[in-house]
Image 1 (tube, rainbow, N blue to C red):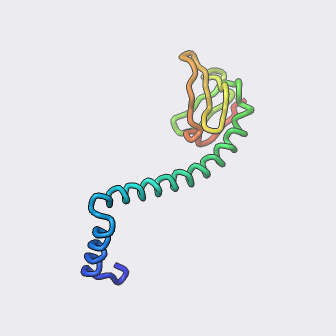
Image 2 (tube, rainbow, N blue to C red):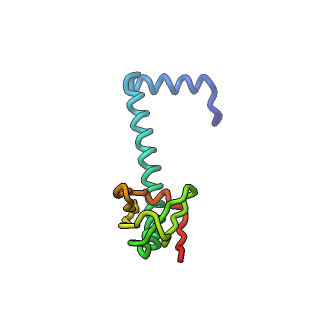
Image 3 (cartoon, rainbow, N blue to C red):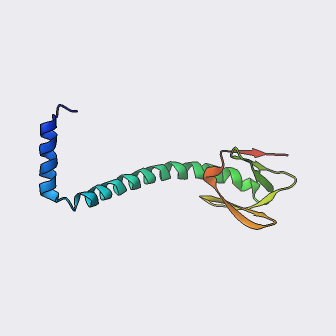
Length: 116
C-alpha cells in the first residue's frame, strides 16, 4: 500500500496515538466523517436546487388543476379528477384532496405530463 510496509504502518499508528491520545481519536474521526458528509450534502444540494428550479417553472402552469402522482414518479396534470395542485415552491408541491393538504417533495417527481 503506497510502498509502506507493516512496520512503518505500526510506527505511524503509535505516533498518532502518542500525539492525540487514545480517547481523542474517535472524536477526531467522527468530526472528519461529519465534515465529509456535510460537504457531500452541500454538493448534492446545489445540483438538486438547480433541478428544482426547472421543475417549479414547469409546474407553475399546473397550479389549480387536478394532478396525480404515479408510482414511477410521473406527475400527470390536467386530469378530470384527482388532487388539486395548490402551490409549488423550491422543494415541495402542495396538493389538496378530500383528506386535506399533502406535500410532495419535488425529488419524487421524475417527469411531468400535461393531459388535455
